[in-house]
Amino acid sequence: MTEKINHIGIAVKNLENSIPLYRDQLGMEFEGSEEVAEQKVRVAFLKIGESRIELLEPTSPDSPVAKFLEKNGEGVHHMAYEVDDIEQALAELKQKEVRLIDEKPRHGAHGSLIAFLHPKATGGVLTEICQSGH
Ligand code: CMX
Image 1: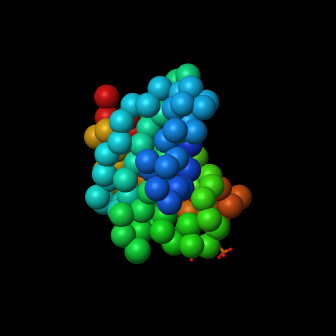
Image 2: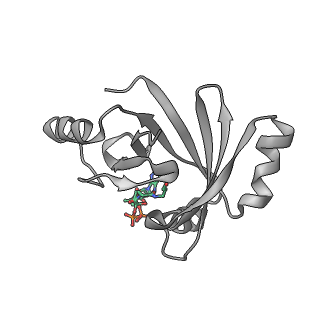
Image 3: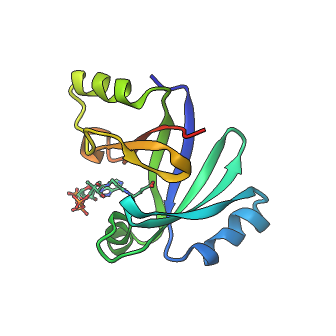
């Protein structure tokens, strides 16, 4: 179903404060930031090989990332695996009785389509599948 890690999501309180570690100290390529309104986050992408680090800052107190930060503080939030066809992947996961958060794809960053699996079904790791927008 998947052959690549598209990105690793890391929850942060403030993008601007967190970008320098990845860009300047670790030397990753900063690809830009954007708001993902549907998920109530602002995100920044830093390229590492074929994958990316996605920094996530909440834009509202009821963002899932705000809730995560309140409970855990800053840290790894999710793993995102790339799929070619997200509708097909969701149908397959449903058929395999994996508990889904999103039955239908949502809009992610860079025109991607994304859907989350429930961390209770994935050993405590919030898992995203992602169909790249380019
Ligand atoms: N990783 C692992 N476990 C997580 C988690 C995470 N990121 N977020 C929540 N959980 C766990 C909690 O620890 C809690 O476990 P316990 O019951 O054992 O304490 C359980 O899930 C329920 O958590 P909660 O704090 O009560 O929060 P909710 O049930 O309201 O929501 C979740 C949890 C995962 C369903 C919700 O955060 C969600 O729908 N996430 C998907 C969307 C998302 O995260 N969007 C932001 C990123 C968007 C992007 O990448 O563009």
